[in-house]
Length: 433
Image (cartoon, rainbow, N blue to C red; front, side, top):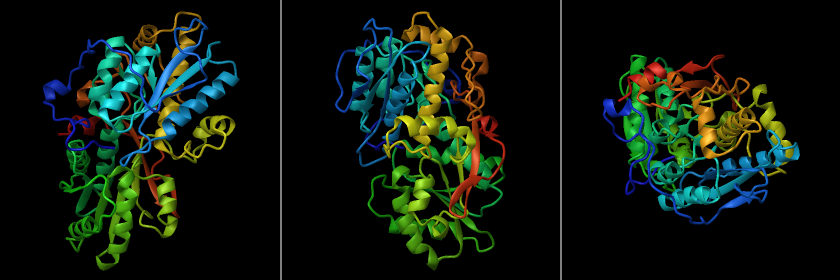
């Protein structure tokens, strides 16, 4: 989820309010051609080949020591196989380039330059914390970025970005607001990185909205192999008030489960403390691996962007996975990255259907999105639209169009809805520091 402190800050860099409330102009850097290691293509033809096919790219980190999202490119490939087996989209075959972004700024830029070289009309349903590296090549070629995971502020400020969710800002603000009336002292355990430095302000915006004092800000190494000292400190801080049950919020990406192993071993020596998290750090597979109903997440609250994976609104995605993923266990319908890629490709499909027999290029895709196209996702999100009048610029995230979060809880070892409706976090994000 985060970058190393030696790299440039990517997630919510410190911006003045006047700057945050404006759109950043598209860059003018010219993209050069460079192949990236770890890139593949489905099913074989590239954009601009004259065969009437449409080329897009999906990238995400794989096989790294930090956060990995292999399910996102795997979902994209499965989607391409599925639509192509059903006649394509608006009569056109879909070619999906994939690239291992590697949690590395140089690799992320190479992926973007590969998209330019192969005449991709969009980058769809991708994950990268290195937006300062990949946006300039995309902007130089006018390629839109549709449905990024939402891990960087740049995704919510760049003119060529079309986000489908509220990213980490909405998740943390929503979690803070939900916990404000239920927790005593709150401790946030987050990466000791530039990106991690921005997390407390967002959580505290939600806590403040509910009349709660700020959380304890506890830094931890993002790639540690154990967290016993951090777990003890978090428990000590969260249990400091004997009159109120405290809460510990681990936000360490894929290392969250390692922290919770240490937390589970240490918690018996402290008063009762509750846990909470955001989806992306914790999902059903993590809950199952940590003991299910007997594990440390039982009773925990989580915030996500979408309905729980058992909701019938995901049936369309599950049908595609069953028919086209061929047992690929990376394509997990409970993974928020896989879900985001599905919604992003839902947007792409709506764009291509709107264009119909017309020319499909990066510029026509952008014009269609900017022209007021409304995308309905079967209730997985509110209707999505990216006209200037539809964007929530007053939040300081000028490209934000969907600030809704779902509140979920772990009951009998399963993630279930804690509320029947989405909670809109636009007003809370407006007040975020």
